[in-house]
Image (cartoon, rainbow, N blue to C red; front, side, top):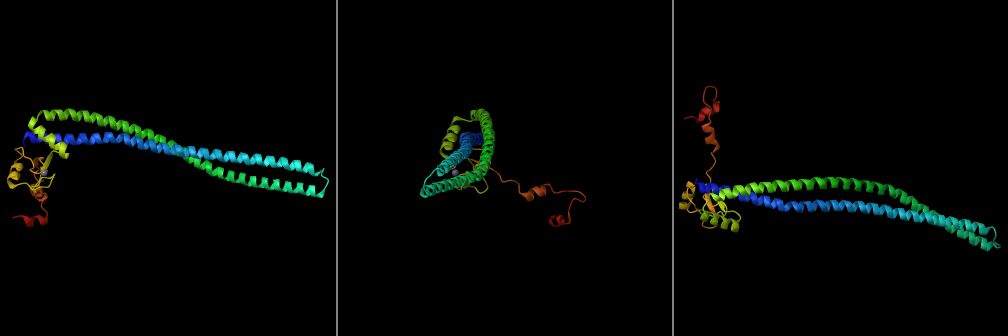
Length: 263
Ligand SMILES: [Zn+2]
């Protein structure tokens, strides 16, 4: 294989790697934004749980003051009942007392409900606090990981860029111009050719003469259709060839089956 082809294959490897690193570096701020949004969600849930607890507490206090108010009324009606002159007035007061007692009973029922609900609220609050704590820790961890990843990617990018300059320096301007143009247009500038005699990038079958030339890996050949620079990749050694090459020799090495294939 010519050094040009070797350098081009290396250059394409570096360019692909750099593109992947760029994509990863670009994706990390999005990832950080996602984990920030998750944290904001658990903060909002905790705040809602606290607010609901406060609203219950305020409503409970309102019922307590209602009870005190009604108790004062009852006490006042009882005092009045001692000095009323008529049965009608007395009955009216008794009726008012009964009415106030009903209100007290209703408020007491409500307070009891709040007391039961408060236990549930406490559990919700405890869970929300635990979630926020866990999410905060995860947020810190993930942000640190994103920072570390970005720094590592940038360091690797710098190393790859230096290597890229070195590889490009070994290639002629004409070759680089073709490489850059096709890379920009197609995303990759090289295509491997295998035994199926096709350009592996655009799947067009090569003319026999082109294929023969590509197989030597000694020239600068491009695909007629996609213009990618072609290089030949010979098939890997077949397993049976491998086995034949490594066939054990010597006493006791051959198994009974092996004898059948021997000439
Ligand atoms: Zn092609």
